[in-house]
Image (cartoon, each protein chain N blue to C red):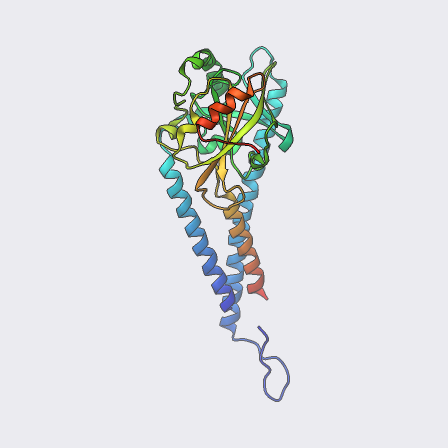
Length: 106
Length: 213
């Protein structure tokens, strides 16, 4: 019983910490990038059209070597894209919870 | 927890009813909580791979003239994925994301592609000097060769600079196998296969890249 309660408390604390940390991290780097997200995610073709359209302009990029590419809202925000998710953390917490539930049942 | 035996009878003494009820309740709560979390994670991964699979099929069936979708292939890590436009969280969930306003694949500038370390770019850390990276769009295929890598702070935007030659920059989170938010970024640089390596190496050294091996 006590073991199960400790397990439960630990899982909840870990979950809260993970979620808070992830939120803080993503809000630091988010912002204007979200504006383009709907278009790009719902219709990647349309997004890639933008790449095609931009290709002419990029042919001149040899002239602007060493200039920042200013590639995203995130870059403008002074951050490289956030490329980690909280899914593995959530999965781990879920598995831990299942195991704790199993032990609590015994 | 072993049950106590009642004196004289030798039979195990059951815990109080409320105790058993609490135990069942906690157990049930943990099972439900864990089950929901696991289902959410598995469901998200399945949805992600299903969408990416659909995009790959679209890429295969697309008209060679329209050339709308771009695919990245890295044979060494057996990666084959359609690149989405933009590096916002939603795009990155579905596939690697091409950073808006960075150079278009195959052009002279710096093509920047970011991907999640726990999905599509999981094995990017194992890329070595000379490994091939292909970007395909319609009938065009652009060949890049890995030449350098660097671990940087998220605020270090120097890796996004345009090079003199065609360059491909892959960005993912670092440490690769950590769980939770990533404090650093792993940057792998590849150059277009036709470009002279020596000049490019000198250029990258100037930008503090650790050239491979």
